[in-house]
Length: 125
Image (cartoon, rainbow, N blue to C red):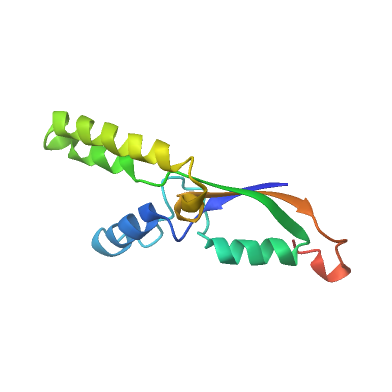
């Protein structure tokens, strides 16, 4: 099974959530995709997967540096915005290939295998 979800520990969440929720009063903010319902920490997601009889065998993270935030500068200075976007995107692309940073990405991705037979009480998974 492949599981992908948003990460509470992401650099982007840590930077943007307070701005969206408290400064802009967008209390229901859940990232850019309105279909998202919640964020997870890597630890909690692994706990949930384990309780459902799934064992993560490979992990990845995506979108470490919030490079799209540079586009907010377009109204002030388009040239600066584009330069900052390129620099931050290069950093992001480099970090996506480093396993150490997986738990800080915007998205958490886990490839899982079934680790045990599900019990009747596990049907909610």
